[in-house]
Length: 264
Ligand code: ADP
Ligand code: MG
Image (tube, rainbow, N blue to C red; front, side, top):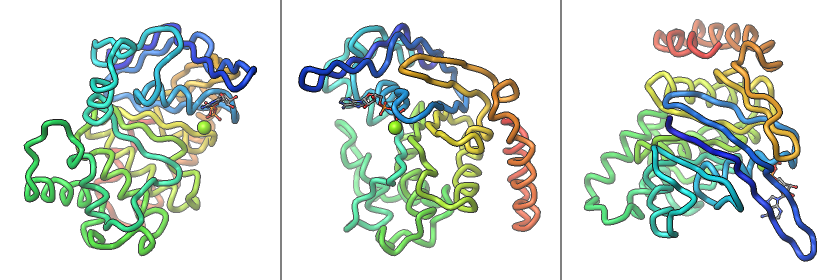
């Protein structure tokens, strides 16, 4: 099992208030799963993602990632796991505004621990990642010279640069229109078909319909954890597939359909 959370609790204390953001969450995710985490605002989605991504520690409970106990790691070890095993994508892209697409993508290698990454090798790897997300022709553009969808592609290239065990995305399409949302989800599905494990936090059923499994949170607890076909988001699968094949026909992209067939 790639990820194993057992009875995870997260309590925030703000002044005299105590907030139970997660109340005993147990969750296992296998390699090459594509999972949606859903729930209304305040249900604990981001907190759970921060736990999974080793950005924050649980108040109680255990987290095993690739068989290693994360909850007991020190700060340096945690930072290393974060850098090497986890790729993050956020709603707001989180790109450095003054840096080019290429420089933004290279960043994880600049900070990789003890890396013998020389300038040339770093550049080569970053270029390959940009090519993989379809942005080979935008490497010297800065974020303000890119569309929202292109910015998110840069962020995805940066997230997959170290070939992380998990790619995590918190509302990755929250700032995008529906055509661009489909672009980005197609890209996630392509990465998934190549073996990437992906966890997407979303509040949209149409986004979850691209995943294989849906975990729903309510008040910091898992309310349901179902294969897409049994979840209420499953009703959007046919629609999503139709839009994707329509798109594939239009762009005559021969690779798209095989990647699509998997999720629904
Ligand atoms: P979601 O992403 O589903 O909207 P969050 O995980 O962000 O939910 O938040 C879950 C609960 O924890 C909310 O009540 C929120 O106000 C609270 N919370 C989240 N982060 C913090 C924090 N850093 N400090 C205090 N309370 C927080
Ligand atoms: Mg959130």
